[in-house]
Each structure stands twice: as C-alpha cells, then as structure tokens.
Length: 364
Image 1 (cartoon, rainbow, N blue to C red):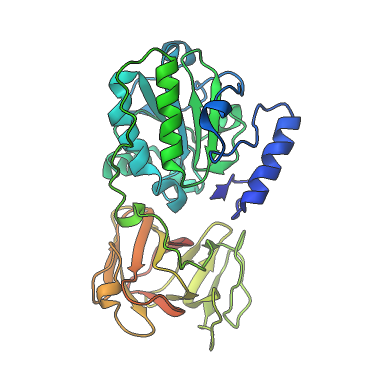
Image 2: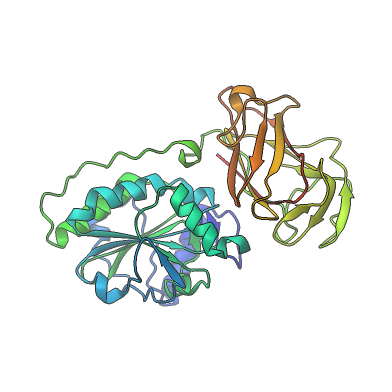
C-alpha cells in the first residue's frame, strides 16, 4: 500500500489503525473498523457525507458526476493510480462488482490520483484506462482536490456510500474482497434492491493483477533520490546531474545499483547513454519496474536476466523468454514472474537504447 505524495512508504496494519484512530480525533469521520468484524454491525456507523467530486479536472467514460446525481444510488469510490501494483491487484474485483451490481443500483467511480508527474497527463490516463478495460466512470484527480476532500491517504482506498449519500464503510489496501462485496450487498438491500445475489462475483485476477505471492520479501523500492533506499553502487549519487556508475561488486537481499551513465533526479533516473543497467537482489515471485520512454514514440529496447541468464519460463508479461522487451509507454512493466522455486535471485536489466526513465520497483 502506498501513502500519499507527501509521505509515500509501505505501511503496516498497525500504522493504518494508528492513523485511523488519530484521524477520527481530528473529526475526519474515519474510524479504525476492520472487515474482520461483523459487517452489518459496522454498517450502522456513519462516517459523514459523500464529499464533492467537482475537484476532478476531467472525467473518462462519463460526463461529470456530482453528489446530487448520485443521490439514491449506492456508490463505491475507488482511489487508484495506474502504475501502482497495489492499485492494480484489486481492479479485477472492482470491475466485477461494477458489472454484477449495476442493475441493482451500484455506481462505481474510480478516482485516479497520480503519484508520478507523468500520471498527471490525461493521454497517459486515457491509455491506461483503455488497456486495463476500465469501463466505469473515472475522475481525473491530477490536482488532488478529490483526494483532499475525502481526506484520503492511501492507494488503493475504497469508500462505500449508501443511498442517502452517507459514507458507511472504508477500506485501505488490498484483500478482503469477499467482505467488501458483502458490504455492497448489504447497502443495496438497505436501499431497496431486491434479488441481490449473495454469492461473490468471479474476478479474473491474472497477469500483473494476480495477488502477491506468499514468499515475497522484497519491498517497494524507489530509484529517484527523493525516496531511494539500499543503493549499493560504489559511487555516491550525483543529484540532478549526469554521472557514470558501476555495478555493486556484491549485493545483499534488497540492495540495488546502477551501471552506466545516468542522471538521477528526485523522482526517477534517466539513462543518458546506451548500455546502462540496473541490478537488484530480490526474493519474490514477481518483479515489476515503472518505466517511461523520455520521448513519446521512441521505444527503448531492453534485456533482462536472472542470475546472469535469460529468464526462460520465469519471464514476465512484458519480457520474452530470452529477456528481450521494449519500453513503449509510461507504465508498470512486469519483467519477472518466477515459476520455479522462489529464492534470493539477482535481477539485471540492460537498456540497449538511451532515454529511459526508471521510477520504482515493486514485487509480488
């Protein structure tokens, strides 16, 4: 789970609950409820009115939506950003709920609030929504105004609103999908819907949207100096200037390094010359890397290896068995999905062309 742009980092369940308790003291209406408690009892809570959605700078799949037009509907508001693996893994369930319960009165609204600067570009969001087959309304919240109206802090976050326009439940992070669907069913029945199927909707969680593996021990790791940790190249990072780096002689678990000519900025590292590499020592089924070609329409070729060899059957959806692939648009790339025994492995990606930006590693 990611926090907002002012304090993004992995947070534990304890941190989430601590935040919720503090937030409730501030009068935000957020409470430290868990879906492990009795759901009908939780739904007697009232966390305040649905905030305005008019802070969105644009809408996809829908003309602008406001509170008045949603009155009488059960609403699910899903905060996400398209390069965040934690936002992508719940997406099959959210799409399944939107389809199953639309005739019973459910309206699903995605609020796309960006983490990285390129996610503010409408054309990138449009492309992501199309490629991810998201058909429900999406508010483009590049100015964070909807995020702030909800006093939200996390990607992903789901808010459940009843037919009276009151927030009755919220959930931060991945998982607990059956409980969340039960919340939807209860709110629909409260709102007068009949014939609501009590079974869970089938969700096709495949590819990058598959749930994380149990063996994952590698954390989200940023490449830009603003939040970089465990950098192990011998050279010190030169901020916002071109420098040649050499790969670490030895990597411990979750350490990483650069090789070649890179310009490391606060948000990302830009490759200045062909042949640049990034290495990472990981333990996990999946390895993802958020990448962007510096110039639209100028693809960047790459090769990936695991322990110095092509990945073979362990390649990801965006790399071939021989490790080859291309960066063509700004998004999350799945480069490794291990089908063999999960152990500590050394990943390396070499870019055959200059002009790629690397932002963050995530794992599954």
